[in-house]
Image 1 (cartoon, rainbow, N blue to C red):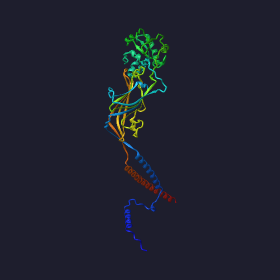
Image 2 (spheres, rainbow, N blue to C red):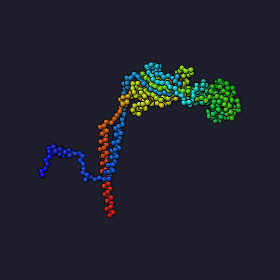
Image 3 (cartoon, rainbow, N blue to C red):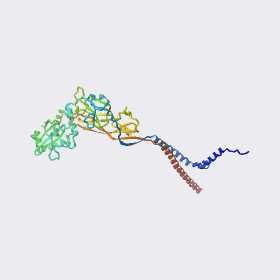
Image 4 (cartoon, rainbow, N blue to C red):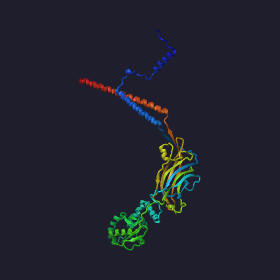
Length: 484
């Protein structure tokens, strides 16, 4: 039977296939001449696990957005900036509170301001009812505040005995030393006095035991007594001013300068009994700072202000109520529920609690004061905030404002009215936060490179393991031959 004649197309296809086979860079080895081993299987399993782990890590990195920041000069030409705020004044009713915006020097009130905010009264949840300060409370608290503010060097001066004019202290004002303590028990003595020298050991023992350590009951609580010595030889003018005519003279002073002379036996028991009796009939006022009013005020909203350095203040006024308020004694302690700056035209702060997807470190700096408390401890003090604001454009779209914050509690003149002040300044630089995504071809290249590297490494590992297995097997066989 004659052989079939192939067509010219078939011959051409066969020739082309043979040519392709000649350039095959991945020539396969026939299965009959390969040798599957257990070490090869273990190496293959490790290779598969490694490839899966590496592929998963690369996939996660591919879909993770990384960021980079650029700092440039701010070219923002907007005329206004928006301040969003939610502040609780704990002890100022709403009818005594006003929001004002001033220039950076605090001299000019900015009129080019639009606002959209509300005042809402808040109570103390019935836990504490406010009341006005009594006159004597104000005086006592101001003395305590002054005592807390006294430098350590001056405090040592006012606590020191007037036993010698050569002890390193100035001893300039005995009255100031008396006013520094609630009660002061003074031993006026002269070194030439025999009775003074005899009483000196007993005085030292009493002072070491009771001076500013033993609490004595008063009509308003308890108080301690400061024991002090006065050398009437070294400080003769002071003793004359106090009317000292005999030595020793023991005298109990109150903070207001009034005094009672001790007339009993100069012994520890008699002195303690005298102090107990005198303080028990005295009003050693126990005072503390407290809320004046039964309510506070929550101010919440937004201010559209000129895009220049300035300050906005929660300003205490006398209001229009039938209550006489001493503005100088007001407490402007407050909590900042929220504070941020925004582009008035943007949508990012249409509801300021719902920021768009932005990096966490940027979000923290957009509203760093949220939830923080700022309290004063004394009269004539006010928390003051200093903010540095910088424009930030995230992913080339929405404009945000990051800011840094520092604060201090300012000590004011007694005639000044405390205000909660937020001074802000806009930086001339701007920050751009840009997204960095890995291109698909870089992802594909990484995968191929990792697959190839893993295959090569595991191949070398498998070959090495196989060589080790062969050597071990030969040694075992050799040992068996010697035994036979």
